[in-house]
Image (cartoon, rainbow, N blue to C red; front, side, top):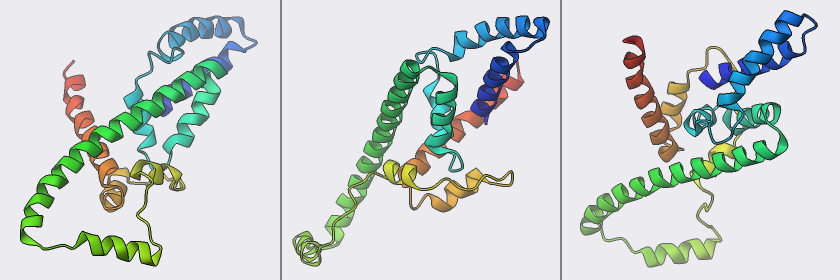
Length: 190
């Protein structure tokens, strides 16, 4: 929700710069300079804040793209989209690697206990024409429609229910919220 407010502030400042009232326009111009100091340079935008938007099933990448299209010129927008894409894929791959390492440990134990004939499973899949899904969990999540917007939407419950479909993204989301909630007391004490 934080980035939504940041984008709204930027939009308000832009509109205020076009005001017919000189004092409003002058103040908005000064605010625009300060706003752009932090939000107009793709290198200064915190990618984790944008990833948090992507992990919101009501917004996903479309919401980020909408505001990037509105706030940035074509060149900066392209840079930021590319940087964001690389960042979320790298983050996803890190979580996927740790998940696979954890699964490998579990499978080693299970392999000793269960005699599985993987060769015959491969023949079965080939004979029936079935293939395993080669799209990543991240790609499947991003390609699904966004959830309908609602003030009553419970993002934590959505991820709880859908973590079986998106286990790696569910872990990413849990970790993000865990870190975010831990940082709240720091802000309250200042």
